[in-house]
Image (cartoon, rainbow, N blue to C red; front, side, top):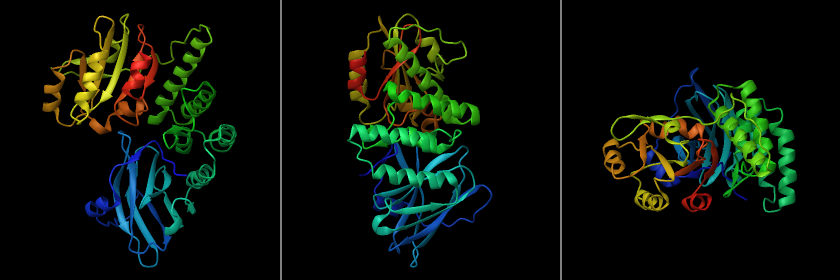
Length: 363
């Protein structure tokens, strides 16, 4: 069974091999290192990949396996703990990187990604153990899946103290289904537990705010569904605000657009993708300025083309100059585009949609 970490591979290995060259930078205090042995992998390309915020794994470095199976890649350490993966063909080994550690991976080319060992950090060893247990799970058996999730919580989440492995496990997607589904009240408690750990041990980690907002939203949704009303403390997040320039250069806040007695939708997308015209047409059919507000965040690199397209739309459109590095993607836990977030008339985030069809149903 093949599993993915919310992201899809963007380029073929062949294409990557043409683009990237083997690089062996000298390891410094600002780099982490991944080394090891791939038996039977001589002269094959092993690729280091990192997820971007558009739902895709991107190749960032590569090297060729030596004749004796050995390989080594060093790369600049991340500013916050992050997940990377090694790719050999269409098989992957996922690795957590916290700082400047050296991780050692040993495997055979024939069963790369399913039978391997990782040493160098406790988190890396635990992640390898989790991946093997997940591969052995019959994911379609609901009872086995629920038992597995309870065991995973006790083993990998409960005492993780905000480690990146807990975020990875919590947001793991198998095929196209989440292991822990934030929309499921039974799973929301796991998000709340991990969010609490991040706030206690890693409050400045970029993943912490997203987990907190997601767990609060799940709690409110659960209370509303059960017919109970609770006062939400002032310090709890009502909205993760955004302030960005529109096509005329004026700064527009999300909080100034939603919550005016009308339902609102925040759309995060790219205006200049080939599917964008069809998306905007479908949104136009949903939009009614008299009863609804739209706040569209575009992550386009070409600002001129974006302004031309944005000027033809009847709703608020803003652009994030950070593009693919936008903090919005982390704050709102966005893995694929477009993404849709629904607010009620008071400006409270009440739901999200992962497709236009789902948005249409929820509106």
